Amino acid sequence: MINKKIALVVFFFVFLFSGLGSYYVFSRNADQRFFSPLSDYKPPVNGNGNNVDNEPKTQECPLNGALYSKNQEAVWSKRRPLGVMIENHTEARPQSGLSSADVVFEAIAEGGITRFLAVYYCQDASIIGPVRSARIYFIRLLEGFGKNPLYAHVGGANTPGPADALGYLGELGWSSYNDLNQFSVPFPNFWRDYDRLPDRATEHTVYSSTKKLWQYAKDKRDLTNVDEDDVAWNKTFTSWKFKDDEKLEKRGTIAKVDFGFSNNLASDFNVVWSYDKSSNSYKRDNGGAPHIDKNTGKPITSKNVVVMFAKESPANDGYEGGHLLYKVVGSGEALIFQDGKVIEGSWSKEDEESQLKFLDKNDDEVSIVRGQVFIEILPIGNKVDY
Image (cartoon, rainbow, N blue to C red; front, side, top):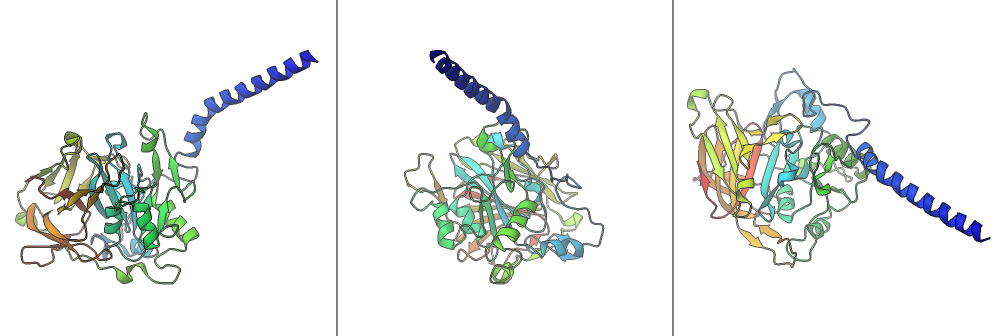
């Protein structure tokens, strides 16, 4: 009887440790197999998920004025703008998908570390990320992109107080509707990829794709270009004014735009935008190095760089990381860089649902050069060299 008990105990521990050993050996591989780019993932045609189309470019993107073909318009006209929170921690670089966004906002999340709100509509990004958590001022900016824009993120600030992003999403009625929080949106719409940026902490490994998020919103939330009440997203949306590139001989000579966000970790988050006159675009350096989009392997460039000065204040909500607030509703000073020149003007956002406007010194709206718009939100008083 004793021998049987001993045998059973031995068998139990052999079974237990063999199971734990198998989990240790295979779980990492399982994570990589099931949380990496998926079996139905198709490599992008030109490195960013957008199909090459040689048809005439006559159709204006409502978000940034870039011109596309009628075939491309037919694709985007069936969906709605999608905002994605993409982090800028040094371990999150190079990010994936920033160059495919129509509009990008950048501001400090906490501790001097910046974060991006990348807004997609007219272009796809085969992979986007690393995706991180929501901040309330980014939500307020996204509210200007029509009725119920999609918002993708991984959790968010939820400490009771003025920075409670998740609480604000509930107040808006976005939660479990146009809000695509990774904690409520199942795999495979978000996944972890430990190989894309090797040897990084787990929090820097969440990715998604515009295709999957738009498809999920359509299939599970009944959100296409219209919502469940058949109301079009752009019923409340106002496009910026747009213009073509300035003629080569009339382009300006401002070669660089150089600034930082805070005194904390300053060198890692300093930004330099270098102007290329021939392409009439600005190339981004971040932390002293070219800022590369991993999807394309090329530097991030933009047609318009807007520096928007906003009041920064601490949330004082008890969060040890130090939640911040940026006043992005109202008005303030702005520098608009385009065509190698600068317009010293202002920004205005009448209320949460209004789109930002950029104005010159005469309070006339500034026309955006067709193409990506990159909006840098700096605390009032920060220095910008150009």
